[in-house]
Image: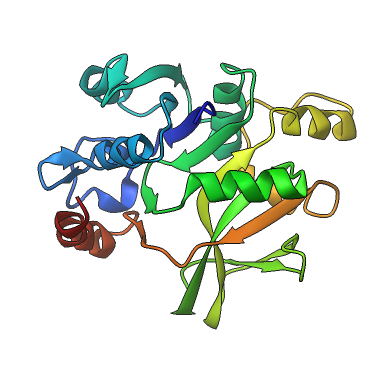
Length: 238
């Protein structure tokens, strides 16, 4: 897989402070290893050999642990001097590579087949290909609406849903996507912005956003209950 992966690893972990103290969220220990370790194991399985880590809060903890190479994957760092939001983190990390890039969140794990995601991306000539997770009886996430051709038509706000698709937080981003947005804006993007609000929701009708559904394992360690659940789940998966 020649496509690099950008991992957003600048999270503060505010909601985990009671169980994970003085660590950035992606460094939260799961069975003796940082949560981010499992992202590298997953990327190795998917044949990704280059990663750009977007780091911020207590970045030294991440950089000291992972170094320049980890699990056979070469690493570059984009260090945020102040929080840039998901959009700013992706935007500046993407400037370190001149090709399309996978995007992953450093505090979620979604067992997506990246080869299949790339096939969909190529087939639809997408600007962004999103991984979508089918869920039932939930109110923690907003939903993603798609048409019969798998094109994303709307991002709906959080509400109680009996079933729906959520954004799984794994993307394939075109190297030209931000340039297209800046052409439409008539100005460069700001230093700090939300990828979800200022890119996905704002340009859903103007750019080619497509979704590929994967009914695979997904966990978000943003709340203590799921962080504790990951301890058991990852023993079985790794």
